[in-house]
Length: 362
Image: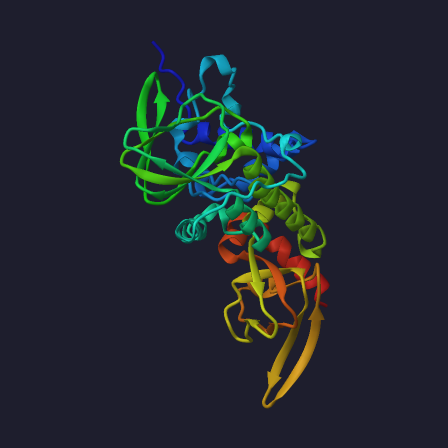
């Protein structure tokens, strides 16, 4: 009897990630999109690179990366398909305007909630107004050992941040429940069902008495998702203005937008100094910066940059020290792309990018 054909290592994961990206991006030309995707995942010696991102959502939740969730994890009566383990983001379902309900909190609760918010990766890019709305909307939930917080297969209506206590998550693997994640005094869970409008992919149970901070579905979508989605749109808009990146595929530009971090700089604060390593590129969302060099005791102004402009890309690509100092003239909101993400996403395009730099720098 002939040997059965062997599926190459990583092939299943690669197809899964491609399916996920097609569902998320909904490209008009999915053939070209798939080609660009596969090229971006090509590693040395026929290997592939996999790194799923989720439109600005952080990887706090161990459930997101657990492969046991990717298959056989939807109840039969929910008509889940292979590629829908993460589901399609339905933007139309997210509230465009929503009045956040303010839930009163004691001083002691406020202190604990502020601490929980600051330590939760999912909230790191929220602005001051969004953090205030988040604080107002969250309520405390006390739990006892053995309490079931969410149940596999149920509709998702809440998001949870662990304040205290131990919790564990289990999933259905071939008809048996398998423990796949644990939370000890920190972490969050429940966002996937809210983001992708899918049933719960796991059961979460309290192992000890504890407390959770709870955010309802509409508040979560109004604050968290719309914030990330609008921020991503903003980043993509910035990228469209950058001559250096105009040759990139739509998929590569979306990957760059996902990789941006935000940074706020106060007036007169130095962003980087001449001679420092050039390991980040900066895009100005709002505000203005001054570019200058120091010549002995004199300061030589080079340029003033404003909303929508960018700096630092030449030093990053050429791996050279900073050629000038850049400082904020006003309060500045920046989108920052670091060298690691730049290399991961654009490494194979470096020669082409170098040519573009040479063409517009002369």
